[in-house]
Each structure stands twice: as C-alpha cells, then as structure tokens.
Length: 291
Image (cartoon, rainbow, N blue to C red; front, side, top):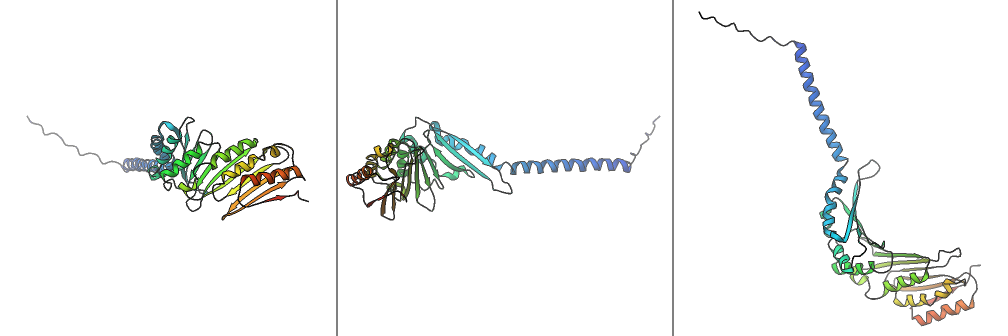
C-alpha cells in the first residue's frame, strides 16, 4: 500500500532572523572596507620607504663592490613633503679609475625614481653633491675622481643653474693646507671638463690668536699661489704680526691682502719678497693693524 509522503513547506524566517543575517553582512562589508582603507593609508604613508627598498639594490648593483649604498626616506606630512634620497660611500681602497666609473654609471638617474641621489663620499670624507647627475660628461667625472683622490676633505657641489663650487677647509697644520692647495691646482684645470667652478679654500690656525687664509676665486687658483703661501710658513707658524692672507679673483680681477695684527717690519719684508718671487698677478696690499 503506497503512502503519499507529506510535504512540509519551509517555515518562513522570522523578521528577527532576517535582521540578524543582514546585520552580519553589513558588519562584514564594513570590515572589508576598513581593511582596504587601512591598507591604502599604510601604502600612502610608506610610499617613500617602499621606493627606497626597491631602488637601493638597483643602485648598489651599479656601485658594485666599490662602495655601499644607503637610503633615507621621509614620508609626507602636513608641514613638509615626502622625499627619498640615496647616498654612496666609496670604499677606502678604490682607485681613481674605479671612482670615475662609479660616477659615470650613475646616469641616467631616472632609473632610481622617485628617489634622488644626494651624495657620493670617499673614505677620506671628500664629497660630491649634484642637483643633476646626468649633466656631467665622462671626462668631467674623471677630473672629479682625480680631485677626490687628492688631499682633503673637499666638497664639490654641482648646481643646475649656477657654477660648480669646490670648497675645502683646513684647521691646524698650515703645511697641510698649502699641500692641499698645491695638489688641487696642479695639472689640468677642473673647469676645462666640468665648466665654471667657484673655489673657496680656507685655513684657520685653531689657536687662541687667530691666523688664517681665505681664497675665493671664480677659476682654478694659480699654482704660484701655493708657492707664495709656502714662503710664509714661518710667519704663520710663529708669533709674528701676520694675521691673515685674503686672496680673491672675481671677473678676472685679482686682489691680494696681507693683514697684520701688529707692526712687524721683518714680516712685511718677507711678504713682499714672497709675492715678488711667486709671479702672482695683481697687486699686493699689506694692511696695518686696525687702529
């Protein structure tokens, strides 16, 4: 005997059940949305760090075994923009040719965007800054590498809309300063390969009684300047009346001032003799002590 099964219609969900399920769906959607927003905020707040992680190995591959690349990332804030800078520290035993190869290999720098290369520094703390590393020729980088290998430290700064600037400062041993000047002004002129260069070279005795030299030129100082200053080694190292030497070249005009801290006929004669023997252009002015 066949018995027809009884079919039961599903009981309709109560309004409370439907509201509970809808609430869970809303919560899930909100959680997903919040997770996406959090991920977006995290990414936007870390774009420079992410860029630094990405491009540092690329620059390190260019530098190879000749140095170490480091990165500094600064994220956007309401008070300042974001930035990513890369720097290269060259090894101590790097040769001039290897330094030139590293410098020549930095261009084109758009490979490392959005990060900028800020500095290349030697183990002796001589440093190159450039606003645009792509504008220096290969021959120019060879000249730069040669100067980086000479006594220092020196700083070379290449701007995009102004002459390059070579800066060096010595404190203490006067003979070290004279040697630095001689080494950097002998041989080919830097501006022959990189364009106009402004020079600022200073020496400070570092003692209680100030004695100093300041050289400011818009071209490579003549080699004769080192010879002139070398002849004044004894007056500068002793307690003579020689206070400072100021040498300036601007727009082709040379000025040379020797400043005395006290009357000293012997030192005055020594300065005049050194100037005559050096063959330096321009005129020498010896200034007596200020009244």
